[in-house]
Image 1 (cartoon, helix red, strand yellow):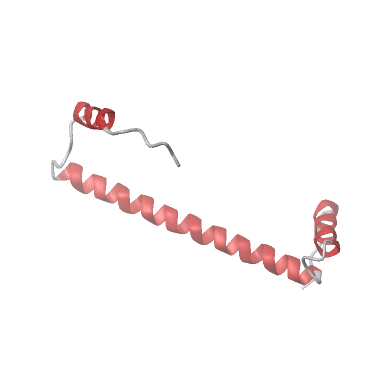
Image 2 (tube, rainbow, N blue to C red):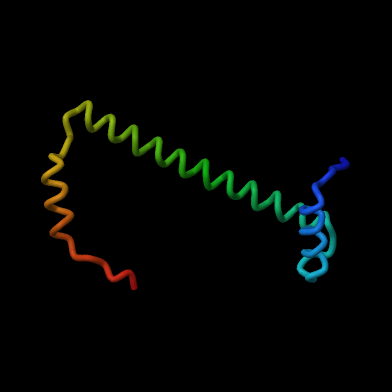
Length: 85
């Protein structure tokens, strides 16, 4: 397979090889495709999780398992603030 790349991508690949991190353009492209596949999998998992949460919310709404908004805000205000450490 022959692929034409814009000059900026050719330069990027060349710099990666010159850095010593990769031995060939094939290695650079393989790594890039691996990372692309990994990113796509993460997006898919996030989407699936979001769809599950939406389905759960719809189920709860359909079955009247709802919490009053004022009650939620009151509960959140009572929670201690995390320092993030």
